Length: 131
Image (tube, rainbow, N blue to C red):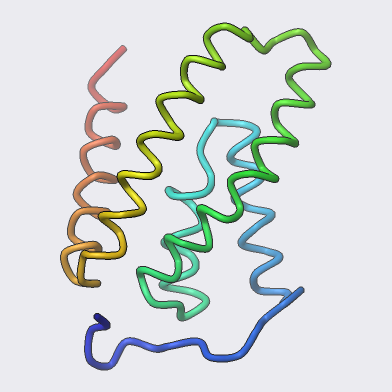
């Protein structure tokens, strides 16, 4: 389901400079802050690149694997990856991603935008008030 008036990207945009810039921003912030795919790429894909909300979520999920590999290699070489904790997080994340992707396929664009925006606001408030 797509909201009326929301753009739909029909052609492939492989190596599009705009997408490369969004990927660069997502990668830098992922490596620096541990965020990137959802918090940076999704809003930029929707607002700046004109993708539908669902497509932006799906594309950012596709970008997570190479972002993660690059980050794990960089932090791993520096001895900063705690393998047992990382494995526990990965097991939970894989299960959670399956559930989330299933929900993504059933939600309309409007409820998805509201849920995503609410999540971003909640995270911002929690980050601002916690020490």
